[in-house]
Image (cartoon, rainbow, N blue to C red; front, side, top):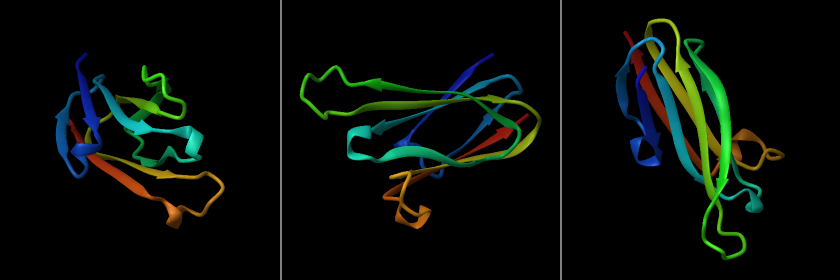
Length: 106
């Protein structure tokens, strides 16, 4: 089982994975602003298994941290993960950022 890491700089990127591989998406997030990364869609062969927020080691108040979303590649074919950064109480068209990555599962 291998691991594949995507970050914000990988927006639009496509990678190849094998069934059972772990896909990790790591993005900057600062929930104190109200903005959080939410999954818009992940096709059904990418099983979401975990979402973890880790605070920054920066002692400054409100410095934010990292959000990691973990998926397991199950099934074969082209898959896509779409995330958006927005305040949950606002409409989806108010998202301030997006991340879309593709995975071809062999």
